[in-house]
Length: 128
Image (cartoon, rainbow, N blue to C red; front, side, top):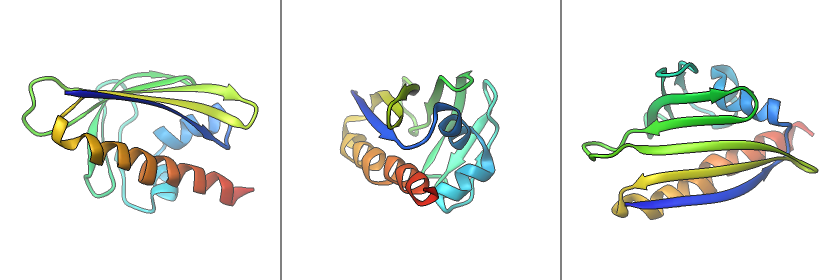
């Protein structure tokens, strides 16, 4: 199992970004896809046609989101922690994901960089 941690700068306030990560209509706008989401502890979610599925473990309004991501039959859950920090250019988004299956690591990192985060940045840059 591997772990991934990286900081990204998103051109939005922590409040805007938090809502973009927890509100169905806003997620649909930045992903361009159907989304199912129940943003409460133990509420489940599915994004990008089921490519990302899991449940919310913790929600700290405008500051922190902790999710469990499902990876088939692995023994320990993959936990994603998103921390939102004010930054002079918007929000510093700290992404930490643990218990990533070794064989999925490169795809997960590419997914964070090339799909998830780039879609968020593009969404907010288009609003300017």
